[in-house]
Amino acid sequence: MKEIRELSDEIYEKVVDFRRHLHQAPELSFDEENTSKYVCQQLEGWGIPFQRNIGGYGIAGLIGEETSEGKVIALRADMDALPIQEENKVTYASRIPGVMHACGHDVHTASLLGTAYILQQMNDQIPGQVKLIFQPAEERLPGGASLMIKEGILQNPAPRTILGQHVHPPLKTGQVGFRSGKYMASVDEIFITLIGPGGHGAMAHLSVDITLVAAHIIIALQQVISRRSDPLIPSVLTMGKIETEGGATNVIPSRIHLEGTFRTMDEKWRHEAHSLIKDMVWHTARAMGAEVEVDIKKGYPYLFNDPDTTQRMKEAAIEYLGKEQVKELPVRMTSEDFAYYSHEVDACFYRIGIHSSRIGRRELHTSTFDVDEECLKTSVGLMAHLAIIEMGRR
Image (cartoon, rainbow, N blue to C red):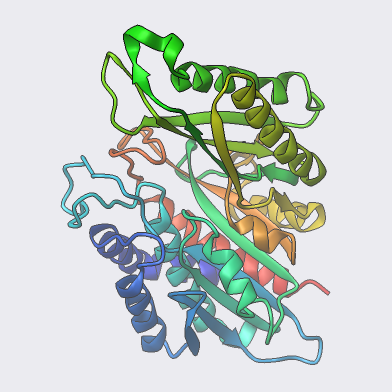
């Protein structure tokens, strides 16, 4: 553990440089070409073998030698940014108009690079192999994790455990958080198009007022949650976008598009809810005289943290950081494509604290998101420590 701390201190300034470079040059999901090249340059410089262009611009690095026990674990970081215009007045602000690392993926990638450096320096102490997964497209369906899995990222060699970390504004710098079992929700996208003849706002009786139909559908859909779901299963249904084609104050539009999200923690209920949503939309629209098209795009599953793995990692984090720095996390209805890995391999997805009195609390997916870069000392050293501990497990 002392060696890990020393190596973490040694690489810290470089990791800050990694993070700032990535923050200045963000790339959207499925477009992470330069980010991928930058990561490969660092791995190549340290003599870490890797494969590129997996599931898009994904990278798989490998540290350590194959053993008779076949011990392999995977460490994952995501690389993509968001379509947000940065408002921070810092020297490392995004130089790409309308694109920003507002979810901390620059921190995740820089941290895994730092962890890779530490593990490479300690190569002779690793009783197995560590697979480094630098993943594209976490922010957009179908999710880079699903694509990398399809292209064999969890094979040759196959990890028995996978770890991932994510920045977390509620936690202070130096703190980390864990949650065993179901931690984050599945996510599906709902797309509805209402079609009518359109007409004059003063003569609604000669038309079908699909604006009113849209209002009824939005209200009716809440019954799927309030009256059809088991109250013990967390579920959220939100319609986040309404858009008409054309229109004015005195025009009843001929087309309205609605978009929303459905999230839950149970796969059986998730499937049932899709049918209920479609039925509710179709019958409401038809009862009011409108034509309707409805499509539900299935997204990420719920994220499951293996209880045994999570408990081991929590205990290892307490050993590395101290008990007062390790927190218990509540369930979240946000989603993460790391969930795909968690349904294939024993997984632990944990959180890293990022706020302090110096920088204040900056929320994810906002134009002013930022981190106290002291968090990089925690994220880099802790992940290396967790990897060594997990590799030593019989």
